[in-house]
Length: 600
Image (cartoon, rainbow, N blue to C red):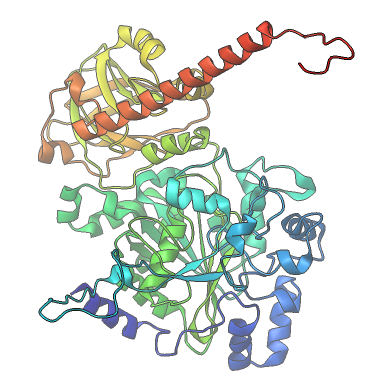
């Protein structure tokens, strides 16, 4: 049934009547059709001058974005080429995962590909692979032996695109070497960004006129993923905007039974920017399972015409799901030039990971009839808790990637709810409180008396409460800062949510007014808002807390303990090796050999 639905949606798409272009990744072919069909060569030259790039570099994933005649754009291009690299070698292609220039010179620079891995791909950065069946091939089979044919797709020929070493590690091993720096986030003069407005301005300068903007917003972190400066800048350029509310698949199952239109109304009421657009331009989607893409297609039909090709830019905050949305969108329209993409394993295509700033440059895809889809780097934020985490294990455990499992605990005055090792909620005043938490299932929850919190965190942060999964990473967060919040609840529903930027929220119910202290690392924002899912406590009931339930399930508990044990063992091995090396150095002494000694 899913295959039939896929073919039907592909035939009904606004640009699926024309065969897909074979010029994806080649500069100039896909975009040469658009000006010729619209208004001819004069308008094409004007469009090239309008965005301020060279005519040879206006279209294609390998073209450097920005104005090469300006110091900032030229510096970005030269940093991509690097000193000592041949221009033909470096400017041939970009990484299909992050958009960085591919090279084999400096492993510390973005876009590095080992020479032996580069030689396995063609000049266009592609490689055909096929899994061979196990066994020994034979030329003939004796009579009477049954021959079974395996028509499984695991033996089909797959196409792999060349990616840099950093994207390969992120896709296959979920590992990162450290915080993201450089690339699109490097300003003029080689300095790093200081304020998010600088990144917004840098992105808006690269948006072409007469283009369409898809602003991706994370429903799991709604307040932090909104970028009012980006919305105002796009409106000043008179660019149409469609708000794509992503990750609705992470909402609990009870929310799926309700009409999602209620959540759409909640979204429109929550933001002035969203209220300023047409109601139909707010689309709820799931980039993970393609929910809502049919409705998005209808809105694209309203804004786009086949005879007037435009560029479609996907913009938004880091960790909002832009790259996942781009991969799913290309799958939905039947794009054939992205290689083999495993959506469930997050392997192939544009690299997607919870690491902020995974996409380092603009990644462009040629579509039929001269259209072009562009994935942009995410706009960073210094107010999200995920910006303070650097280890891949902590980021993958913190950012919600699966359906949430809300759980309700009872709090009294003088008791606290601990959220991993990076936040906690204390009840200061008020009656009985039902605290429904909406966090990733890998974040441990713990309820205890407030006067015991300090001692527990000093002894067990990073080993019993996680993430972070390391005591050193916990110390990097610094001391927690208190935010006092006053909320009101009723007996049968929650009226207020308390949101911690970057990780999730809690819904507060229970009759009466309560005073709560929210402790988070310095710089992380805390919001109070109308409740998104007010009846979750009523649907799921209240859970009596037990210390064995802090990791949600025995499977997660065993997984977390294995991670902590592995890190402890590694630290112990490194310490013993260092002690042994120091002991050998102290015991070593010089041996004097007399002159004329024939053998020693």
